[in-house]
Each structure stands twice: as C-alpha cells, then as structure tokens.
Length: 133
Image (cartoon, rainbow, N blue to C red; front, side, top):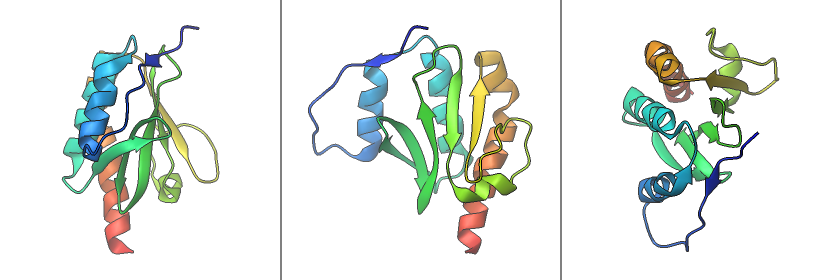
C-alpha cells in the first residue's frame, strides 16, 4: 500500500489554520480533493469548530479535541473521532466498538458528498454536548 507523504517545513508563528493550510498544500495523497472537501464540511458544520495540526494531521476541536484525520491509508479518507461522547452518537458512518472513539471511512468524492449531512450532524452533536457540560 502506498503511503501518503508530507514535506516537512520549519515551524513559524503562523496561526493554527495557516499551519493546516500549509500542511495541506504539501500533502501528497491520492484523495487530497476528498480530504479538502471533508475539511470544508467539518469547519462549516459549526463556526465554533477550529482546526490545528495534531498527531501530524489536521485535527478539529471545540474546547476539547473532536476528530483527527489519519492520512496513512490511501484508499479512503480516514477520520478518528476521539471525543468520548462519540460513542453515544448513532450513525451508520461511525465504525468500531472502542470504548472512547469511532472511525469513519469515506472512499471517494461520491461518498463524501452523499454523507455530508450525516457528518455535519455528528459534528453538531459533539458541539451541542460540549456546550451542555
């Protein structure tokens, strides 16, 4: 299996979003367009959601960590939802039976577009849960 790669750059005083944009501009991944589309969906789900680089990949948070891309796989877009509340959200997109996380896999742009509303709903449920704490 071919691995996605990213060229390393020196760290700067760039904002978190600028660092993610720089990361994405250097990312060599066969599903880069799909990754960009998923980024847009996540960021557009709620204006409270911010992005940064965590675990050497784009990651999203609102007061707490929510979800991070895993770019090692190149046959699908892989999201790791690692906020503990994720186990309470019911969605056919969320896979795994881990005690504190779920995975999401989107194989192509058609799946990204078809599941846009479900992904937005998942992100909104996480934000709503955090707001109620």
